[in-house]
Amino acid sequence: MARHVVMMARAPQAGRVKRRLAREIGATAATQFYRRLLAQQIRRLADDARWTLWLFVTPDDAVSHSAWRAASRLRVKGQGRGDLGERMTRPFRRLPAGPIVLVGSDIPLMRPHHIWRAFRLLGQHDLVFGPASDGGFWLVGARRTRPLPTSLFHGARWSTAHALADTLATIPAHVSVALADRLDDVDDAADFRRYGVAASFRSAISARTSANTDSQSPGRG
Image (cartoon, rainbow, N blue to C red; front, side, top):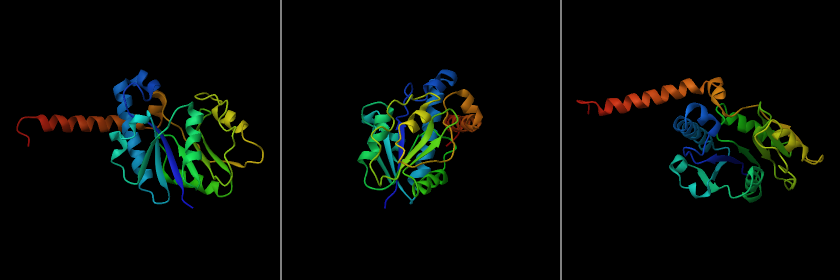
């Protein structure tokens, strides 16, 4: 049966992405960082033959945005209206048959082997969650051999240390749950430094700036 990976993503527009990070490093730098990380993750996951990658994006009119237009084997849909729980539930109810693993788009250490481990856990469990250090979760997956619990995500206190615990509390006892690897997103400058992305990001920006300067210098072809 086909496997599906859903990445929830925002169009990389200044002022709309990584707002907490933007307050500390500036909106332009935060947007450039998010765009670069998003492109890396899309490339990693879109080219993996073990699943089909779907991008559920916001705003809905950004389905043709250049940030993901060039990726091969990629299907793009709008997230639709509602709170985060409603928007996360939608792919599980609408995509073709097969297990689904849904992930965030700003997880620097996320790699295909993390996704594959979640699918393997779904071989023996109804649901799988990837916990984050801040009490949230970066991944949720469903085997979809039975209907998704109607209470899933109801009342979750998003963006707090209670998000995962609140979600787990809504799951009926007969539904089996497994935990995948613990990974984290980048919310602020401390995260930016902690995961080593600050140095690599600055190097990339510096290299691009240098290349642009060289190409504009007199006497260069």
